[in-house]
Length: 472
Image 1: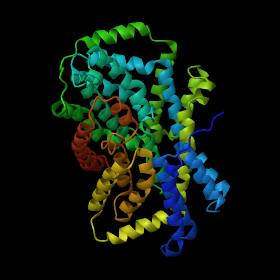
Image 2: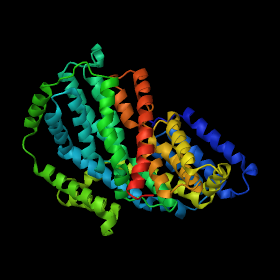
Image 3: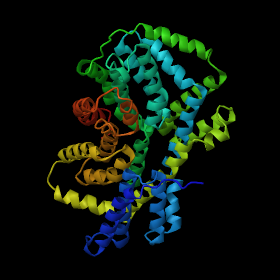
Image 4: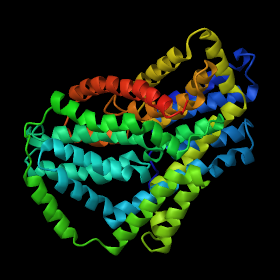
């Protein structure tokens, strides 16, 4: 057999930074314990390793956990506690749910129905694609899976039907507009639901470690107004600022009809998938009222998919995205929790809070949101960014006097909208940008404009809406 590729050059930076921080132990702040400082060194090196990725992120996390135990920063029993975190398992279960959408063909059928209903105009097509994302997002924690597995293939098919391709310079007919609209629809739905994107659940777990409980319904109600505003307004803004050359698409309806005819009648597997998905969604909505844990709901839904034969045990075992996430997420959550329990995050929060003494918590929270948002230009993925900065920024906001739930939710929303920065910001951006429908300068320019809109809607309107519904 051949050896798997390891990019050793990409190991240099995380190891170097980790060693420098570890070597600065004699100069550590007096309020930080030795174990906390060493955990900080390993954590920073791990985050950098997750960004440079000399090997896949799960491998980086396993090596980091090994170092933690090997150098006695923590015990092996403590290190294993992260694998029992309920939020981690909720992500895995939701991945299995999303596999059901793909396997049964229900996701594709829903997409084609939306195209048939709203596809007479190019703008209508954009809303149809966003509608597909919206419908599937509550039970699909991988926004990359939604973008790449359901939405993007539909865009390519529609674009081909209208002879719109980057290969011959005709991408601006319909393809560029649909790509960019679908990408930004994905951003809005990622912020709309707690279970629509894995980094949201990272934020929830980090908030939980600081004794701030965010329920599925809390997140949904807080994101309802800013989410709807973005879903309705952003496609119109793109239509004005980056318009398609072809405004009418009457053939899209016929194409969708043909594809639906090929699929035939709704299968039993699709019906079962739809019923179980609706059940899970209803239980998530009312879980906080009936005392049912959201993770238990996810387990129940997957159990029903297995019992009805919609999914097999092999489907579960082959869902590598779920198991990959389970490994690295468990380890990062454990390490972030240790930074908090060992006192590093409380010290950092107090130190920054002291430096901001006398400054209004509203100004502090606004500055944190801006810094958090624009720092994403330095990250090639949302999860590493949230893992690195969310906990510390939340601690600073709280120490400045910000209402804990308000700060936790606003920074959580920030973790979705900061993907409107670069073409490498997250998985969906790589998928949508890669084929070349949108030029890089257009992507950055348009995203900069829309990023300002997102900060205004989610930060200002979102905060006012949360005040109205009594979340702070």
